[in-house]
Image (cartoon, rainbow, N blue to C red; front, side):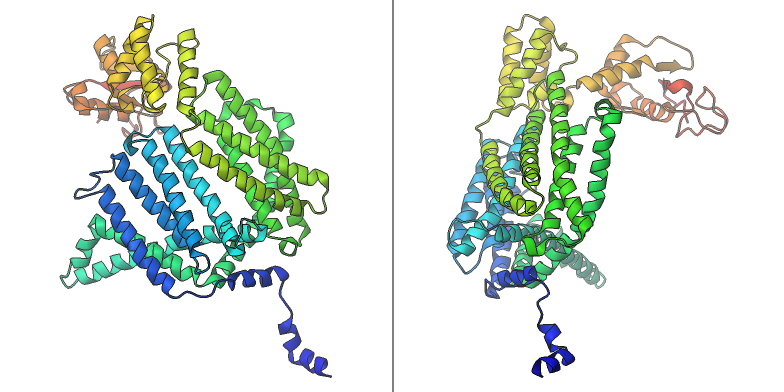
Length: 572
C-alpha cells in the first residue's frame, strides 16, 4: 500500500537515480568540502602574481625587460606555478598542490631561461616551451587524481573527470575575466561622463591591467571550484555536444579514406603544403570525439547505436590517417631535409601512430568491451605523453643541431644551390648550432658564393633582412613580368637588384619597402599596387587608364605588372 501511495504521489519516480554516472560525478563533487575563503585567497594570490609579472617583464617602461632571459623565466615560473596551484589546491593534502606547482614553475621557467631571450626564439625554442606547458597540463589531472586517493594510483574516472573539468574551468575563467574587463570599461565610460577619468587612466597603466588579470582569474577559479556541480553540469553539456558531433566527423573520415584508392595520394601533396597538420588535426578530433562518446565508464557510454558505431569508426580511422601523415612527413624530409618543424611533425606523427595502434588493438581484441580497453590505454598514453613532452622540452634532444647537419650537408653536396638555400632559417631558427655552422661556412667553405652569403647572414640583425628562397623566386618572376611605361624600356640592372632586395612581392601586388628605393618611391608603390591585376570586366584593355577600368583593380592584360617611375602616378 505504501509503495502504491508513493507511486501515485510521484515520490518513487523522484527517488529513482537518473544514472549511475551522474551519481558518481556528484560523489566526486562532494569529495572536497566547500572552501569559501579559497576565492578570496586566490584573488589576492592572483593579483600579487600579476603585479610581480608586470615588474619582472615591463619594469618602469613597457617591455623594458622582456628580452632578459632571467626575468622572463622568473615571470613564466610565477605564472605557471600560480595557475597550477589555483587549479589543484584543496584543503586535503594541500602540500601536494604546492609541490606540484613549484615543480611545474621550475620546469617551464628553466626551459624559458635555457632558450634565451624571448625575442630571439626560433621555431625550435617555441615548440620546446609549448612542450613544457603541455607536460604540465597533462600532469595536473594526474596529480589531482593521486591527491584524491592519497597514493600514486591513477583511476581513469578521476583522471578523465579532472582533465575535462580543468578544460571547462580554464575557458570559464577567461570568460569571467572578459566580463570583468568589459564592466571596467563600462564604468570608466560612465565616470568619464561626469569628468572623473581616474578609472580610465588606471586602465591605461600596464601594472593595473596585470593586477586585474591575475586577480580576476584567481577569483574566477576559486568561485567556480567551490561550485563543482556547476562545473560538472558544464562538463556534461560539453561532452553531450561533442558526442553528437562524432557521427559527422566519422562519416567524413570514412568517406575520405574510401575515396583515397580512387584519387590516389598525389593530390594530397599537390593541392596543399599542410597535409600533415590537417591529418593530425583530424586525428586529434577523432580521439576527442570518440572519448566523448565512451565517457568515463560503461554507465556513461552513449546508448544510441549511431553514436557507438561512430566512436568505433573514429577509432578505426585513426591508423590509416596516421600512416598517410607519416608518408607525407617522410616525403617532405626526403625532399627538403630536416628542420625543427619537420622533426616536431615527426614526433607528433609518432604519437599519433602509437594512439592509433592502441585504439585499433582495442577494436581487434573484441567489439564488446573495446571502450573499457581504450580507457585503460588512455591512462598509459597520458603518462607516456607527459614524460615524452618533458624530455622534449628539456635541452636533451638537439633538434636544431640535427637540422643544421642535414641542411648544411644538402648545401655542401650541391643538392641545393646557395641561391635557393634558406639562410634566414640557418641564422635565426636553428639556434646556436646554426650560427656556428654559418661561421664555419664563412671561414672554411671552398665555394666563394657560400662564403659571401654566410657572411651576409651573420651580419643580419633579424630574419627579415634576408630574403628566403621562395621570396627570391617570386621577385624574379615579378621582374620578368615588369614593364616600364609609357615607352617600353629595358629595366636598369640597378633597379632590378633593388627590387630583388627591397620590394615586397605578393600574390597580387608589389610594394616598395622604403622611400629611398627611388626618389619617388611612394609613386611606384601606388602604381605597382594599382596596376598589377586582371583587366576590369567592364571594358578591359591593356592600358591602366582604359575606359571602364577601375584603377584600384587594375587594367593589365595577361597578368603583366606595370610600374610607372614618374613623379606623378601614371595610374591615378
